[in-house]
Image (cartoon, rainbow, N blue to C red):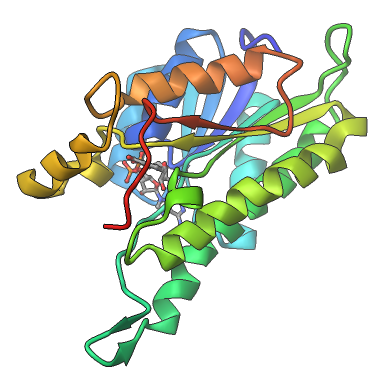
Length: 256
Ligand SMILES: NC(=O)c1ccc[n+]([C@@H]2O[C@H](COP(=O)([O-])OP(=O)(O)OC[C@H]3O[C@@H](n4cnc5c(N)ncnc54)[C@H](O)[C@@H]3O)[C@@H](O)[C@H]2O)c1
């Protein structure tokens, strides 16, 4: 699908991987609705991008919030062609620690944002996509890009909740692509390795050095722009569908 002239939703678009994708989409000629909880960052980015972007305060796991955000995007731009799901949160808790079980509420919170939030947004965005005129020889109406993590396969100690949430995002991407095939809507998933974003920047130097050891080549954290490049390639390439792609410089996470 051509990005020029299209309308995108980017969740988690105020920061990190989402922010870089918002900027890449606008540079490629799209208009973007940024869905996030960080009003300060979201409003500042929308102001920077002028008429090409709006910011909507949306909690991705709240049904009414997402419906309101989609209504605001439709009102501002008249259609939705692209949905990029970047909103996500991390967690670190062992299954049993010092004799205490992993807090259930924490497990539920991670699943609620990372997995249920992703599905909540894509299902409601897809309804609007079904109303678009078909484009090109394959009659495309929309493209969805989800964000998992290499923790979907290589979850480390303490990542039961995060790994489960991201394995869920990988797991839903193919059936969603199948569900939406007859509507001309594709769904793919990016599983990032270790990226230089505010989420990772908070780590102590020692931990960062340890993580960097796991990266093969290039031996550095990924750049948010490199995530955005793959997201745009997934939008562009009509034959890429139902796939989860690791973007990780050949990293394989060890147990700890
Ligand atoms: N940075 C990495 O190394 C890395 C690696 C693998 C996967 N990921 C995944 O990539 C995605 C983006 O991560 P990032 O590194 O850019 O993080 P980030 O913290 O920089 O950005 C995440 C954004 O999501 C927003 N957000 C959080 N919960 C939300 C909610 N309920 N509703 C709406 N917005 C919400 C935050 O406000 C923030 O702006 C996440 O899903 C993360 O799990 C990141």
